[in-house]
Amino acid sequence: MLGFVNVFKPAGPTSTQVGARVRKMFGRSAGGKLAVGHLGTLDPMAAGVLPLALGKATRLIPLIEDRRKSYQFTLVLGRATATADATGETIRTSSVPPDAEARLRAAIPHFIGSVDQIPPMYSAVQIGGRRLYDLARRGETVERAPRRVTIYALSLLGYAGGVGRFAVACSEGTYVRTLCEDLAAAAGCDAHMGALLRDASGPFVLYESRLMEDIEADPHGALIGPERVIPIPTIVLDGRGSADFRAGRFVPLPDGSASKHLFVRDSARTLVGVGEAVGVLLAPRKVFV
Image 1 (cartoon, rainbow, N blue to C red):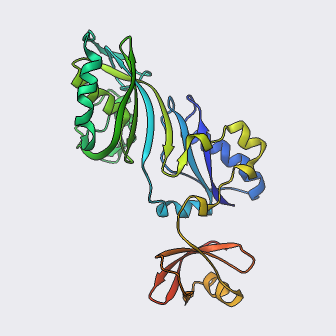
Image 2 (cartoon, rainbow, N blue to C red; image 1 turned 90 degrees about the horizontal axis):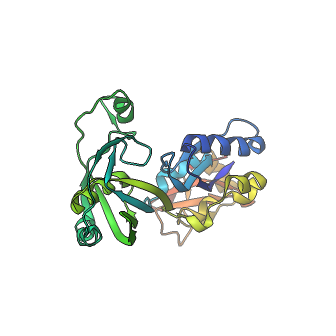
Image 3 (cartoon, one colour; image 1 turned 180 degrees about the horizontal axis):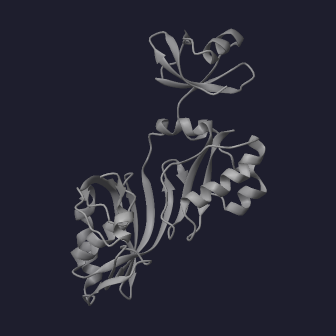
């Protein structure tokens, strides 16, 4: 088993639960335990694109260079929660300024580019070997160092009744909940994130994602080949070359192969691994069969 699946995760289940269900679906045809890797998890209350790597494709995750994310979310003004989202208990309330929409629009340019974010206490970040959410559940708060993230685009799509609907494109590691709190501070009131939808994660986009029921009905049809995800060339080796490559030996690099990394297929067009160009030779870096 070797490929990716673009799952539409509904609000409710955890990313781990979704991964376990997908593992069960594909594990039947894989003939045993199947490795499943996440390319960025979603909180339980969030919905949208959840890319998964299956089987030996988990070894290809480091080659996926595009880690940008895209979300739509709602900002609910007037109430701050312990988790910074709609699932948490209310910790503060404040009145919503009558010109809140204008304040939000004026604040947006200040959040585009490189910004520092302090990770929320309810997050999977580890400090001293302990997850922040474990500390938060025990009522503890610890100092967190700010992290530099990039906001590529941010826009207010609509505003009504103290609720703003936004779209954001950002780097990996951006906390939308923190962005919501920072936007609220700029608007002069408390707030929390309402709904969150991820509509893109690197090369995986929402309109191509599949519902769990559709994947279960046709697992093979949902499987995405690695060459559709990672934009590197593919070369085909003859019998001797592919045998040497499988054995971990350097092989001559075919003429015209200018890329650093290449997918390698044998004469039967079976994907056997990923090679790295080293001068005029091709070095096996990931061997699959």
